[in-house]
Length: 404
Picture 1 (cartoon, rainbow, N blue to C red):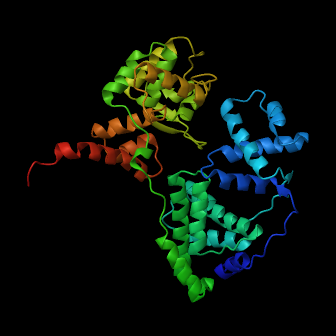
Picture 2 (cartoon, rainbow, N blue to C red):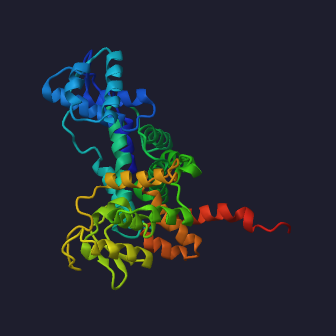
Picture 3 (cartoon, one colour):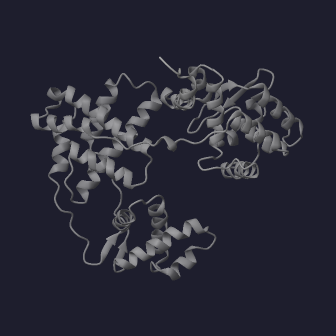
């Protein structure tokens, strides 16, 4: 079993990284500085990095003239971040940029062994997917420790560094959900380490430092974070307004069945079983399909679409895509177009909102939440509970008695 002391010692004895020299930075160092300068970076660092790598590859300066060459065929939202980066780069005195050194595995063997030891005993994690998510999250934290060490900053497996890490994730633009999940995995690992501190040879000071991790608060998740949804009348109005049979079938799958946009693009003709009223859906990140109930209203729309001759051949076992060459961006565009035409396009309303619409209306109609979870294929029941909370908030003032 890995010793926590060995991990802590490795990062706590960090010494200053030898500077590259006056006016010289690596790509990674420059992009990290740009990220900090931005405050709320979003996807700006990623797009700036692409531009820097382009300039290095073509041996051209990082300036506006190079941007004109780079911008060919790119959209405005890909170019604006680069313009801001060039301004930042000029403010830094236009240092010489050199490639990053070859990557090497940053997570130490001791950290890997610690993570594997925890996961082997984590009885609350059911299924390979959950363990995979936890492994990824914990590896990200120990990779962060190693990066801090390489850049000459003090970092240990303790509450202070965990707090810095949470702030770093926030600055990178990760969602509150993702940041809080990463923090939760670290807290659970910490509890396990403290429980087995004798076996892991922890000192009392190390144990005390780790106990303080439990007090670190995650990011606040605003109620408005979740996507809006249509009510039943709005949903029916939307479906009734669509004349193109292919578009109607696509939006019926979103708003009636609750499919994700990517799941619609993956459907094949053979995935639609009108006889048994089943849909065979391959979810995001999945390699296998799960069958869900095909509601009568959606089955009727799909029947008309299949009979329209837009998809051939009509072989029930066909692996032909149900909507050939359909992309998620096209779905989002079409949904926005129909919502805007009906004046249903509001802040927070998108193609994914139609999935929320399906889930919310199932809850509103009294369908058991466990069946809604199964239908929407939520891995965590907590995700389904948000529909219940929304219903509770809406019904509170109506159903509470006038007096007690």
